Amino acid sequence: MRRFYAPNVALGPHELGAEESRHLGQVLRAKPGDTIELADGRGAVFPAEVVSLGKREALLQVGSPECHPEPSPHLTLWVAPTKHTDRFEWFLEKACECGVSRIQPIWTMRSERRVQKPERWQRTLAEAMKQSRRAWLPELLPAASLQDALRTLYEMKDRPWLGLAHCPVPEHPNWERQNIKQAMPVGQDVLIAIGPEGDFTPAEIEAFSEAHFTPVTFGEHRLRTETAALYAVQAFQILNAP
Amino acid sequence: MRRFYAPNVALGPHELGAEESRHLGQVLRAKPGDTIELADGRGAVFPAEVVSLGKREALLQVGSPECHPEPSPHLTLWVAPTKHTDRFEWFLEKACECGVSRIQPIWTMRSERRVQKPERWQRTLAEAMKQSRRAWLPELLPAASLQDALRTLYEMKDRPWLGLAHCPVPEHPNWERQNIKQAMPVGQDVLIAIGPEGDFTPAEIEAFSEAHFTPVTFGEHRLRTETAALYAVQAFQILNAP
Image (cartoon, rainbow over all chains, first blue to last red; front, side, top):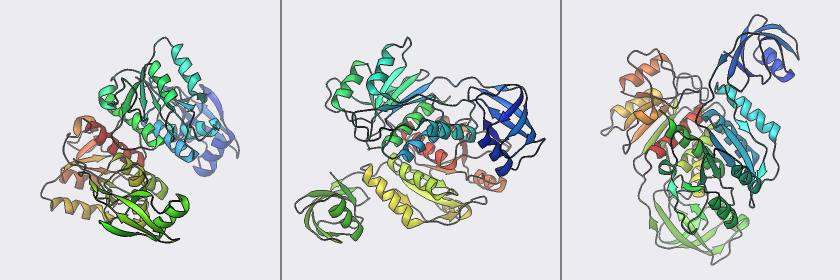
């Protein structure tokens, strides 16, 4: 059944937004009496019957939702947006399909992109959520400097396990990178930071070290930022699979 | 050091092709005396000194190669090219970065794309090989019908382990899909077939069953064809990691 994203849906009559109404009527050619699904992105999926359908508005009658528990454990990724935004958007789509919980874009010293596109990125995630029939929309946090992101960690009560990937740290004292398979604990919340195209600076690596990140590797070859970020998501899923 | 793809390179003088010569001179602004690397895509990486540089030709002096053993075990993927070729090309880039050995595009009953672009796809793979600093170029086989592809399996002496993924087979008798993590043997050559956007037909699934494919799943959510195909590559790498 066709699924739509409706963050504010509740039982009873519901008016679909202009864009989704147009999609429902003109692309899918729905008619009154047809049934669709509305996902609120926080686990509830509601059946909804089309009552009436205009060019820019669709009225629905919403029934009782099916509730899906939040996937657990959680994976949070810190990723420096890539120079070409399509590579970052590609990553958002795939990370959502594959079950990431939270993404925070971070600005690093060597980030080549400095502009965030939260609305566009949010739409990419919502599309991927519908397409992959997930009930939970990954949380997209506002972009933050690496310093600010690290500061929030220090304020956390229950810190996730912290991994630092896609980052050359061969000469850092006391640091030996482990393969993600050995390093990452299974069944625990995890946060993995992915280096930018130009790598983290030595000072940034020092800051990660002080915050007790574990350096991990995904193998001996050089991966693009967005490939490494998706690798982290898939490694997390595969290692946590039953 | 900057790496180029040169399938026919050998010790001694070597002339780079027009496109790569232009890239070397005009984009990278190389000068006589500079050193680059030439990878033949079959494990040998040669140091090469720029001797002279014209607009469309570069003459190099090639030294003794460093030889990298072929990665093992091998992963072969059968994938139905997606309707939009950019999604398939994206998959080729990522699969090469992540270490696939062989890719065969297959035509299925419900394939939405029927045109292959072998030269363009080959270039995508070569670019990704250089970028990820791999010494082995994945083999791109000519597209084949599923029937013909299955026939080649029957003629093989040492068959790889066979997995069938991204395919709804809930009602097939005696078939129960296992998570790839349980199903896939570690340390063995593997071939995984990925369903097209419109799924395999019941007759195609029957043919896979007769050929002793094991149905596997990558989790409960619906993945796009290219996402599932990359998931297979990353699962293979992660499960075979030391």
